[in-house]
Length: 375
View 1 (tube, rainbow, N blue to C red):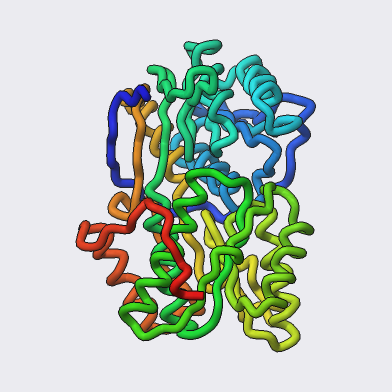
View 2 (view 1 turned 135 degrees about the horizontal axis):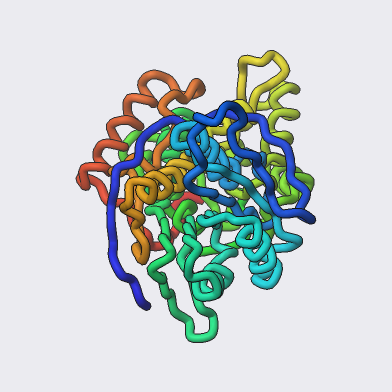
């Protein structure tokens, strides 16, 4: 495994809340520069987002990345665009990248594990283009190794820390019940969220007299990030089986869990969802416009990560060849600052736990945890 440098950095800032529409995948993205008089600053950088088959309004990972590019457009004057590929294969992704390059995009952001092989190939095919991989690094399946070239920055996260905080806070708030999980495609990154979440629940059970049951069979892989109907079917079965909170980390598939939870909550059931990546409180809003089934969200500041790399490039400090590992201490992982369904006591305990993890006073393990004692 070839890793050039490990780096921790401080990411801060707010995300833009936007309502986005889809983009036809048949044509390269064209986003006209600023219109106006001749004194309008020239665009210094064109940044493209390669989406795979997910959309920029998935309420999750891809949307967060796109919001980071939009923030860079406003703050830094870059030109942005995005392109969805025909499928998530390496071949289709490389075709999308070629279209972005042909359209003049000098930096391409690739969020998600599915881009591993495509990123490895693209960084060699286009040495003059900068690549930013998020939640993964360029991976050559042929020799089973990572290789981060000088024109690539790989961003990763200690995701288990975010999962821990959500599991801990949810257990403290509900005190009793049974938790499960709905996830997309099985990956090492998602497994970190899961084990962290379970550890947070167990920590609450052991130290705060909560009684949350966990069963490994109730943490389910849907196999997709883009099937809300399937997500709703899985969530319905979970709630029918007595689970009262589902940790949903499956992109657009998760929206099905929110829809199911909302339908049941409107009929008086006490069921909940924990969101992922972007604050999903609004995705859980009921018809009264005030109540929400979203207990909290495991925030992963994907957009801030992309924004940081863009800003560093414009300052002449592009961190090419580096592997950036972000965590709670860098501000890249957290629950939302405001969790309306947390009591003030729960929020205080979550804030305290966040600080402990950030300071290194408590270490969340990356190892998979056995929950058999908590069935």
